[in-house]
Amino acid sequence: MPDQPAAGISGVVLAGGRSERLGTDKALLPICDEPLVARVVHTLASLSDDLIVVTNTPAPYAALGLPVRWVGDEQPGQGSLMGVYSGLRHARHTHALVVACDMPFLSESLLRYLTTLMDGYDVVVPEVNGLLEPLHAIYGEGSLPPMARLLAGGERKIIQFFPEVRVRVVKESEIDRFDPDHLSFLNVNTRQDWDRIQGMLSTGSCFPR
Image (cartoon, rainbow, N blue to C red; front, side, top):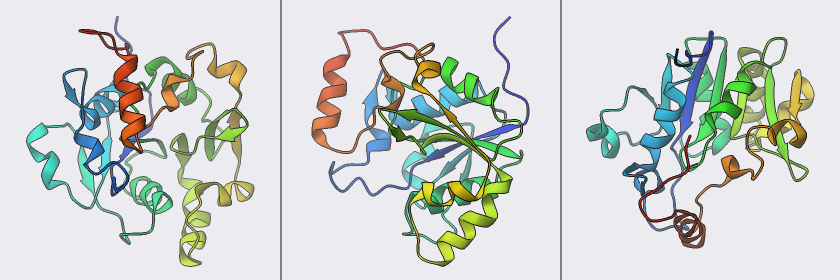
């Protein structure tokens, strides 16, 4: 029997970045025979029955036919914290699995593992090389009030509200069981990043989800 979507969790994909350093819309970069944002959405579709893409410009993605709801930032131009907040505000479940649209090698098994840890926590976030990965994390509705306070004060750094809530940090020893090379956390910010990812792909094949 195929894996079923995790109970009680929404899936949120952040696609609000301007891609200024890359010079093109990274969400539409072709990888593994589909646009990058579509690959990310299809990975989350195996985990959630409520999928959201946060973007203020949904028109370029309309033709993709993705099984998502389109949500804009409640206040555009406020960075990733506003994207997480806006997605969680519109989630149909109490928790949302949030990822960026430019992560081509998300591991379905690692993401599913994160969902098993969310009970009793407001945030479930991986830590790799001593750094937290807030754009590959789970957020509960209890995160909304401290997020709102930060945003009202002009703060944009996601992890600033973590001391105010219950956080489960997922250590590398746990991550390595599912993604020993930490490919899940690779993203596309520059042309060099994209060239590196393209170089990792062998002709006619792609990393499995």
